[in-house]
Image 1 (spheres, rainbow, N blue to C red):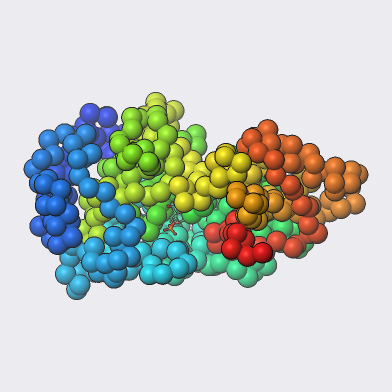
Image 2: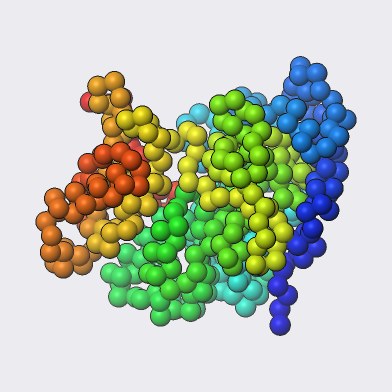
Length: 435
Ligand code: DLL
């Protein structure tokens, strides 16, 4: 029988011992950034705080935050704590405008990341005998290399298929007996659709697990993927600045455990920036406990959620977080209500006849914003669909009203009109600047 945990010591460490471990790492990490990075030293001094002011974990709240602007303004190496020759890898986040935020790694950082990924994949049924298809972008995006490293460490047979060329992805999946696939939850929709056109039923293949992340996807979407694919759909959460995927992962019960021996989580109120208690909703703030090249202190992720300890049946004691359903910067305010694209997804996925593929047009209506939701009928539903489109869109609109609390017109487009995604889906088209 194979072992249950990849790294039992840390994955099942009692809470008090984990807290001692974190405190010790935090102390040395604060001292390290103070000694090796001018920006951190200057900022600590400006705020009149010294590394040895940290006596307990809650004292971390006295230290300054790091924000994305700190990384872009000091691009490329301003946040580095090591000599240039120590850098082993450089990734970049997927931001589309301006300078990217970089992720810098020493070889030791890469090793830690690999361990975090192996831990996550092991918890999700991936084993040395797995045939692991990596359909994440294999470049600056951390998804490709992160999963590659973790699956390599476990010893899987890896198919580094990258993104796109969907028919070939499906052919490989079928011919090679792929048992595990990783990509975005939106790209697996594209794969499902194309497989159906090719007459391939993924449920008949040996696929056991899908590993998704990099964008919000709802619980409803998880059920839809599992029903359509015949495999379990697991979550990965992470961001380039903190290492990439590997920050948090689903266990077999779908609890999203944080690798808290590497990443220390806090939740703060995004307005007042005051620390919130476990269980309260706010912005996730992360501190890298063991990294060398770019160990960010109190990094504001902009992701919204909660963290809480729960006794998980899987036996892991690692703290858990909510599935991230939105960022402070992608919230739309419609008729005074905060709306996240993922809430629209929750409504759409309850309708069997529409694809969980959608886009939201954000427009100006007088002084306020309004949205139009566009989706498509599933292929094959045109004939079986007995009710007129107007009736269906009215029902979806009503569902959105029930879930989100706002009225939004829904347009049902012909099949294959909305651009398919092979990476992170672009859900919102901001048309407020155009007529
Ligand atoms: O998306 C890293 C990653 C790759 C995670 C593959 C999981 C799987 P970035 O491109 O830097 O890194 O984007 C990070 O994506 O702050 C979240 O807003 C969002 N995000 C990542 N994972 C999830 C998730 C990668 N599971 C940003 N659910 C993060 C919701 C996610 N949002």
